[in-house]
Image (cartoon, rainbow, N blue to C red; front, side, top):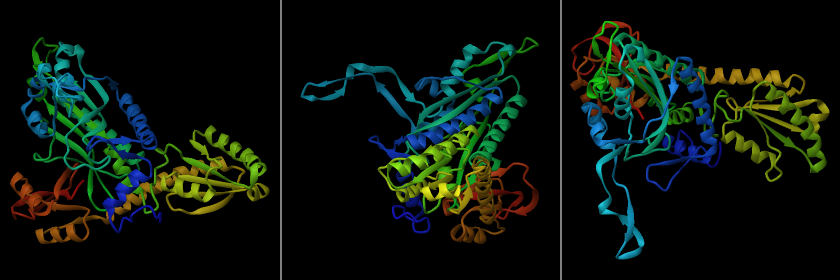
Length: 492
């Protein structure tokens, strides 16, 4: 275990905070609650973006960009949405500073530069986008609109943690407009499937797809669909949401279209998004007490080659073979770094790339050259083996696939071990305190019961799983009849 890291068993929260900083993913900034995403962390986020962006475009979506600022009157137009985000809003009231006449070295807000209307720094873009769509949509021929934007948003969080909850974060937000309710619901579910596909097959994190309760749904939505993931400490993390907005925003912004029958109808809407919170999920799903473990599909460096040598002549000999291996791997589309820096010893480099979660490490020395072999170490299991240089590119290609599958299978097995069915409130509280994880339990469907359970245990209904098995039972809290179990957990 790295001496620099707190162990997960000792303090999981501190382990996470230490790891994000020490593995060069992100850092705290001069702005309270905001983060600096460092190049190594941003590279992983870029890989996430590339994969998701292709998935969006493959399903017919296009990228656009909308303003960071939203006039307060527009923000207020959809009341539920405005009310839901009101406490987290940052507001611009003035547009100029001036020198303080009483202190020439200081700047003050110019009271004469007050905005006629305050601007909200976007916490989400439905308001500005639907105001824009009103000018884009007149006829059924203008539909559907399938737009996504990659952007930053601001939600003034009081308690922050790098990637998981920050005042400013990066995300994508899709906003689509449709002629019918059925089309909009199909879109909402399709994008949920896209997110589940990405999180499971790229991030190697298994998820539960479900629908949120009325208490937990997005402000301004008719229904919110979600994917819920489980972290190593047994806490849930909402990994993505897709909202069926009905005609709420169309009515708020008077967005109508003329049908084929020459009638005027309000448009149907969806919105959906994932954020840099996925970076937090990636860290907490796979990493260990030695550092990060990055799934090969998202790793910025999939393979690192470390030379072991004496003197310049030894380095030259090793480098010839190392560069030949690098070229063969790159020809397979594998990202490779050959670390031939003479400023650090091989042991230091081994520890560094282990901390940063590079999936495969190849060590090659002068003895290896004589034997025609190299040492290959895999980050997920920490196992090492000596293999022939001949055919190394195929071996590594297969190894990367194996690591990706192994990470997913391990996480899936952990989820299974940390998922419990309970039939009483006492059992529910016991499992929460002793085991944590997902709990499947009967609920009577009332907001009152949901709130009471949340108040008393800090556990929330994460979702009502899709395709849920219907079974007669009684609510663990009220004893009233129930037709299905829902998914509870304590969450980030």
